[in-house]
Image (cartoon, rainbow over all chains, first blue to last red):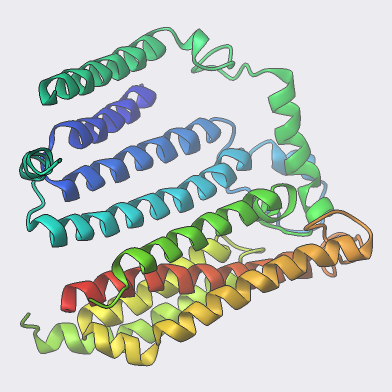
Length: 119
Length: 100
Length: 138
């Protein structure tokens, strides 16, 4: 059930990217999509156990491993979060440039002016 | 021309939503996990998890097993990620950091 | 933009503790939830709080962008040097250079990588934010 809800959050982000005219809202949509994917992976890895994957001491890991969540999706999502931050920061910088060039953040006005001054 | 672009964007959005719906209704083609809700997993994935949970500290030295993967088993990945961050920073300095 | 005294005082008093907490996350990343990237982002958020609560120029005099760039480049070179050290010892690139054992000698390599990545990510994210803020303040 929660997979479907996370997919719904992803679709909210996709809707924001595709149908909002404001560039900042498009970037917020990208961020929502990134968060939904991170949530999906962490939720998928957390099916296995209940405790954080941190060893306490030199005990044999078999008993402790049975109740730990899978650390592999969390480590992968750490990388995905970093790449998402880089994408969002570059998108914001490009939005600054577009605002400086066209004086608006509305993608429709930017599109109209860009097509009219194409030649 | 703009109408063609808009129709193509709308078609791509509808296609993405359709693919998502198909993948969520038929989970067998979306993920190799046999049952999306049960505890049945393929043998290889389970053995990787058990290996990391049981021997990760001995092999990499970190108590935190997420750190053990992040800086031990997948340190190349971390290096590439820092390169991505470095490129993003230099791109932003190039784009908005110039004196007007 | 008009700012109240409350925001000013809270940003000024809180940002050193946020920097300290970020360094705690970096330094204990092998033991507790945390790590280089997370602690670096928390450190950068302390600098961003200073820039938003006071003024971007205040944050830029406390943390000059030129020196942040030097910190980022130096920590990146240090990361590559740690990777090459693994080759020199006889293993692979980014191999753990310390002798095998359960945790205590061997965890030092992960600790060093955490410190280097924390400095690099903190400097990088605060550079991004400071450049965007400088654009806003003119």
